Image 1 (cartoon, helix red, strand yellow):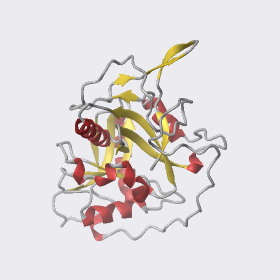
Image 2 (image 1 turned 45 degrees about the vertical axis):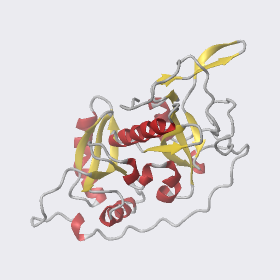
Image 3 (image 1 turned 90 degrees about the horizontal axis):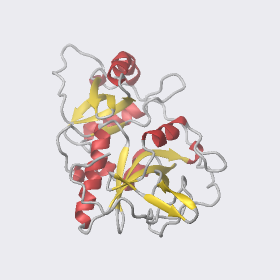
Image 4 (image 1 turned 180 degrees about the vertical axis):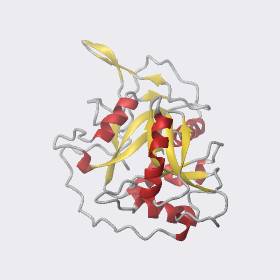
Length: 286
């Protein structure tokens, strides 16, 4: 993963501590910047009643009188596909996703990692219409499933001011996706002698990942800025806090390393052991 404006990196051979991260994947030692991970499994969050899907709004239903679709702007990502045949698989799913989501404006958007099925085109993710549409699609119930409960906004291809995208900040993850979301996968951290450069690089990296159909976030800590993907709850782990869902394992396969400035592997040195590259790390959501 590369960011167009990343700060210049020091040597890739240096050992860099994860600076206060609650490491659940690697048993490495880090300084206290984030809360330490629980040594025992936290109590399961209280179960909430699954909300019933509200009836589709008039704008969801196809209409010959509807104005032409505006295809630029922020969109709601409903499904993501990766691989060389991603576009074909997304096209094959288009009609089903349109029916399940109650949206007539779904379309396939090519991404850097494959393709995404998206809906809508909004000036800002904070626009009232955008927030209302996202709430509707997340609440859709299909049989006994809520297939779009993790739908999220992705920016348009052109550059976006991260200040217009507060929900890309990890601090908003629980507010947007639920208080039961406890973990996210850290895949990069950014450092520079000029902290503002590191912040901007992390923000742009997270925005680009969203364009690529990944649920990505940035987080600005005291000494570095982080980029993470995904949100997970306590129920996604077994009694030993090991991942037990395919979604987490798939993310770890796509992003196996924690990259310095989004590009450079961190080399970990241990006495009497071969050097290793630092893995991506499950961390606590603040």
